[in-house]
Length: 466
Image: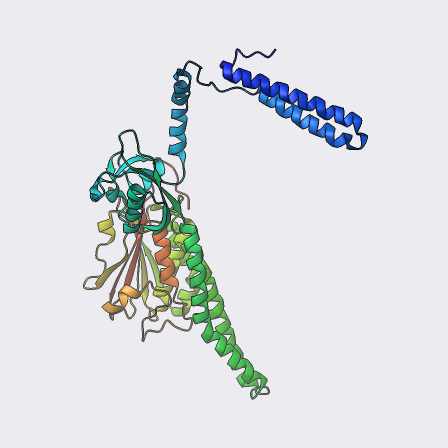
């Protein structure tokens, strides 16, 4: 007889347990008898007997949950619920998706929608201070609020799109379901937010890549096709024309390669733009690496590159390759638009507030913030400013500088023209780093562009590594 003292099984459960064991034993005996009587079916019948026997043994030996006693007392069930409550709370808090339970109040009182429960993910995303917070203060999207009302007062389940506010765009799918009323008679609804940011970004990346590539590659491809037809026809035996056309074709092919590389780089940056980096980067070392990389270009243009303020370490929170790409794109533009013999200054600053980073750099110039980060109280930034003494830009051009393929009419950038994606890449990288971007320009006096990044926490006595 099995020992049932370790598990508090009440009489009804014990009776069901013995009934299951007896039925399983009879079934095994019948299957074995049939196996003896039918040798051809013996393997299948023996296997069936083994399965039935194993199942019966598992049911017979498994730990039994306490059941309510026959006298109607609910003490055992209540104790079980008390034990499970902390586990359910821990599971609710650990869910990766933001989850809210909302109460209704009066149907015509939108201020009566209150957050009854919110897990950690919901509190972090929506900045819900605690239970009882106003739903309209946490979620201001009319579509989500309408879906909540339909679940509360119409008993309807809805799914709507929700775009979270902020500098870094996030896309969510809000699943709203009605819940049974609570003990106080309040109508309740469940709101679950599923993050679809990556899916949306991948779709936008695909659409933008096809649209931009087809538009920008059309011109060089048409040029290459025309020169190829000329070389196969009238210029077949003209050595001078052949060499000149081949040089032009090589330049067009190089332009297409740069364009494809920039498009892919921009797509990768946009795909991960909502994921902030967590590394540490020393701005002055990144600037020195950029100076070495562009030395050939600056020598060709006879442009002097000066780095100022790099005597002390200026560590920022970021990804080194992308920080270097920001500085290099800014310096490349400054060199290309500078006249021969001009000077390009790269100035590094640290310990700045957001207002200090946005401060004026060129007296009398038009200043415009192209990107402003979400303000955090007490946040400090380190900034890199690249100033050239080129032709400058009029006020109307500044708001469009970070648009893809936008170029200022009437300005030449030298023999090696850009792809029109450099500042767009800069903006998306700075946005991913939760930083800011500001431009100042004055026609005839040049342009200064400042990118600033959140300063990394100081390490006591530790050496900063690039």
